[in-house]
Amino acid sequence: MTILIVGAAGQLGTELCLRSKERGYNFVGVDYDELDITNESSTMAFVAQVKPTVIINAAAYTAVDRAETDIASAFAVNRDGPLYLARSCVKADIPLLHVSTDYVFDGRKTAPYHETDAPNPQGAYGQSKLEGETAVAHTLNKYITLRTAWVFSATGNNFVRTILRLAKERDELSVVADQTGAPTWAGDIAEVLLEIVERMRQERAIPWGLYHYTGFPVTTWHAFAETICQQAFELGMLRKKPFIKPISTSEYPTTAKRPQNSALACTRIQEELLISQSDWRKGLEQVLIQWKNNDELST
Ligand SMILES: NC(=O)c1ccc[n+]([C@@H]2O[C@H](COP(=O)([O-])OP(=O)(O)OC[C@H]3O[C@@H](n4cnc5c(N)ncnc54)[C@H](OP(=O)(O)O)[C@@H]3O)[C@@H](O)[C@H]2O)c1
Image (cartoon, rainbow, N blue to C red; front, top):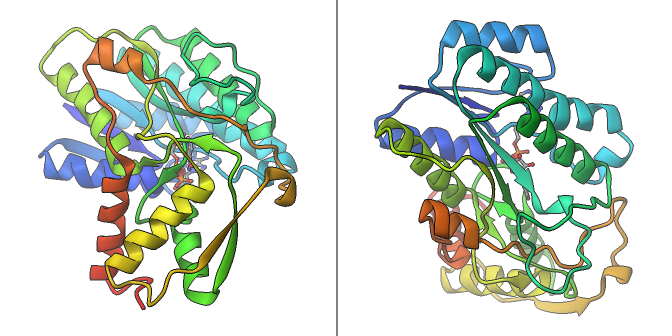
């Protein structure tokens, strides 16, 4: 079995490569410089050459605000890329494990979103990801699209890194307190995807399709920031905790509109794939410890 991991240098891609190696899986991890998924012919040729048993697509255009003005690039990576990967999967007769986002929803629902809820993206990023989901579903039978949210890891830029950097520089931070969602450690998403790969390896039946998966519990960006500072303080990575002022979305305008509620109900994955959610606070601790051990973002 050979796993082709696309977008290998990103938050999720890095964790997928690390864990595939730990599990002793045969895998090929490539990023933009080796495979540009927006180029159909080179994508088809690359897949034909590697001859993978499964493709995991961790590549994406994730700059949510930039996507509003760089629309063509966002759609090329998030819609056309998954389409070309799906076409190459059809040709090779292999499954595609794809990843999508909570931003496909408008956030007006007051309860967690199910896979059956109607999407209504509020911006170019969400729309491009939704069209990527549709392209995969219309091209391929054997696919998993895993919608996740608020992803963080030890690599790349993310909310955890930003909050920790600001907490070192300032006595007071202002963080949005009226948007709810669930942070998700990229390490946990990687475990879910590799668990599905393991089922394939064991030739167990897989109910293909669309799934939601995030960490638990649901929180707000403000409470997430409080937890980051508290854990970093307890680990000796912060000399003192800043005051974190709760603010409203209207006090923090962004180019792209964010969903007010982006909590995803994860019952389908639990019932059909027997995969449980992980506590994101444990993942957060792992990330902070990794940074501390590497002397990264320490006091
Ligand atoms: N980050 C979040 O908060 C979040 C939330 C919900 C869902 N998701 C979804 O989760 C998945 C993983 O996200 P992530 O946070 O790991 O993303 P990420 O850290 O931004 O990584 C994405 C990777 O894809 C690469 N890439 C971009 N364009 C490419 C192309 N044309 N061909 C090949 N590779 C390309 C990027 O390379 P460059 O850096 O060189 O561009 C980067 O290494 C994505 O599907 C994303 O939409 C993320």
